[in-house]
Image: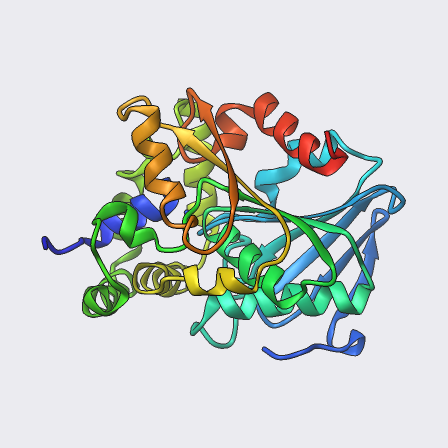
Length: 304
């Protein structure tokens, strides 16, 4: 097996991917009719009427909740909850611990749903955010009605290197974490910029993605990259009771059937998944195909 460089894996993750907290554990304040909830690993911004269906949006690696802004703004009658993982939000501080970022964020989301007493929730997660969403759905089975996984798979390294196992990838993951963390800032950003072509099809959207990367904490991105590289979250799917819809980008370079099998094969031994390909898109489907993305989320939320 060829070694995976920091660039290759970070590009692929971006381009393919606590315990119960009581209400008092969250800080709450209002700003422009919006509530911000904070926990150890996440912040949550709540907008909309509060009377419509509840949707929780979870972004991916190095990406703030802003990635969902057009979707959220188009649905003011929904009860929208936009998550940002600490360290990925520009001015958001990194979490105190950089271990178990996915599970920690998932537990915070499950705790948030309990604290806010929100039921029949649709979780929408992109890339790493989909892994967070699936783990959260397993923790909050009584509150989650559906999960939409956007261009994500339980084991990202398996998409890059079929036959890879977490044990095989662990040494490389640790080395990559150290390499990425220690890189001078300019070298790190230069490395990340090399992967923009797989993020989005348009130059403007690629620039937006790069801006988000620049706003993310480097050590947090490095830790998350290593965690995603060496962790297979597929066993967590056994706890997910809600239906799961997978939206995946049909990269122009690969046959649609090949891409579909790459993704679906990671889910099919654990859960039934409704897989729907999105043509003419790369990893950030919501940027490349915003109308299709909105229609797919509406279809799930409205039950069409």
